[in-house]
Length: 109
Length: 116
Image (cartoon, rainbow over all chains, first blue to last red; front, side, top):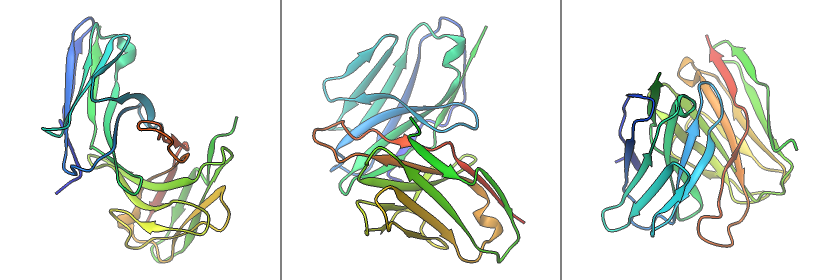
């Protein structure tokens, strides 16, 4: 079983739309959680960490449900510049980081 | 601010050849990682290191070896390259976490390897 399972997408949404991505993880001992963004043929970069209480960074909101082992990312008022692949990442004991397969987002003018 | 530097950026090999990818970080990070990324597969952990002189296997270690003789360098070796090892390889590093959520990975720009 994969450590991290993620919506494959792709998601094609108009500018201004709200879009949500979901992710589940298998290791109940997972310690920390993240969303990374990857632009085409570039390295992944941290978008935001995800905390149990939920957290927001501008138009981005991340939620964590430890009981369900579920992570989400909500993007409001989508911009053209949000077009990218979004990667769900989980840190398990031993400081290993496991990535989901990524969800592709294209924001259409 | 160099961060994480990978060399080479591109390489073409023939089946059976060997090569080494070098990852260097200048942030004094304890932890270093090698990933491969294939279309539709996401990033998969090959090997990682929790400190100088240590290495451990990740999800897909077969066909690769690693060494961490110096804290700042993490080498990934392919002893006998196979076409299945055609991929984009990313190195990443992070410091020792002092609180939950502190472990942020910093990535290199990637190394594109083609094995013919």
